[in-house]
Image (cartoon, rainbow, N blue to C red; front, side):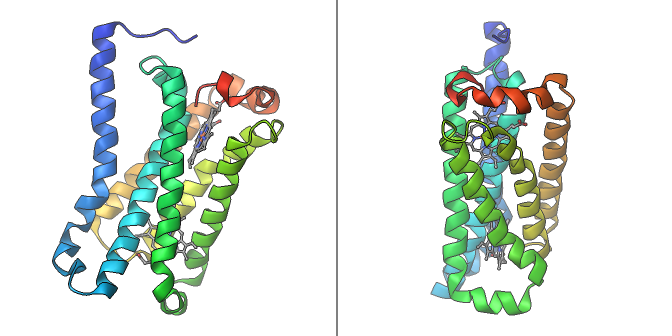
Length: 220
Ligand code: HEM
Ligand code: HEM
């Protein structure tokens, strides 16, 4: 059981972390602020704007997921572990729903995008979507995949990196400095999260042996 912080320190830390998480979720709305004038001008622009918003929000939700997952040994010192676990599942499902919405909203123009966008980074989108469904499904069915779900779950770091690069290369808003700063910031923290996890000597060992435990016994 991780040692909890004193009540005062815990409240301040919880407040700061929740404010940061809300800022991450609000960022896509600010990134797209320049589109608000034309977004409702016709149905085509509305659908394209919503596809972009869904994509940016999906990345924000999945970024929070990777932060919660990789820094969970620190987060359980301020958050209640079962609540943190529930939050991890809910945010993950929201992230997936938004990624699916991005795909569905793009379908009217998919042929056009396929012929004009960079082919490799376009195809990265469907690959990310399929892998995401796979890692989430195996985590939710961890009893069935008790031997492998945790090793499969490590793929989430790479999935998010590929999703971000996909957005940076073919996204309609990829030229915006604000989007680039946000996404390079995300990439930096994903790297730090991965190194933090990998630098824990028990981590590799736990990937081999702890996956026999049910998620209910672990922290996200
Ligand atoms: C919605 C279904 C999900 C469930 C049930 C779930 C469950 C879990 C659990 C139980 C852990 C703790 C593993 C441990 O350390 O023992 C974990 C860790 C983690 N989760 Fe999830 N998760 C889900 C979705 C996601 C999503 C969508 C992402 C990101 C794309 C994600 C990213 C991570 C990461 C990066 C870790 C740390 C893994 C490591 O470094 O070993 N999870 N998850
Ligand atoms: C079948 C799956 C997918 C296809 C065909 C696809 C295709 C595309 C296309 C054509 C664009 C450029 C148009 C635009 O900016 O709205 C785009 C942008 C983007 N995609 Fe995807 N994608 C897929 C899945 C995903 C997934 C799973 C994610 C994230 C988890 C994602 C994240 C992004 C991001 C962040 C952008 C940039 C949005 C912007 O610049 O406003 N995509 N995608």
